[in-house]
Length: 165
Image 1 (cartoon, rainbow, N blue to C red):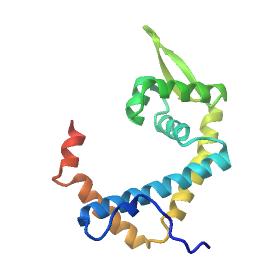
Image 2: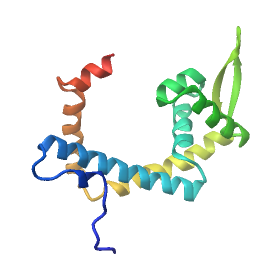
Image 3: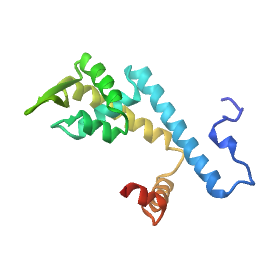
Image 4: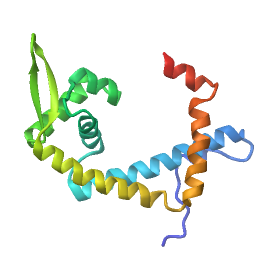
């Protein structure tokens, strides 16, 4: 294994910075490393991008499908991005568009049977990767970290007021 330290966003921080800034950069660095690994594995093992996987995950949670606008809001990306991803997945017969009654311009997007099967395989691998990537922490440490992050997410902080708006 390479003994060189990995350079990431955290190198921006030093001891004179406030502990909160150092913590923020640590969280961001951990998230980025985990996401990069998952992106690479999805690409190598399934030939799919993380945004395409994420869109399929949204559809898997809603068997009746979602409109393009709903997908855009849930994934926090533009409608153009959603259209491009849906076009690709539709070309591979993993999703299908269904016209909405009364509005010829609107579509509901659903996973096809092949899409549901492909997503199921990917989701099982994805879960195993996340378990592996978080395995340096014991189950108890993971529970503690989850509780601490819940306090940050749900506490009386600016984060809470931003979610409400």
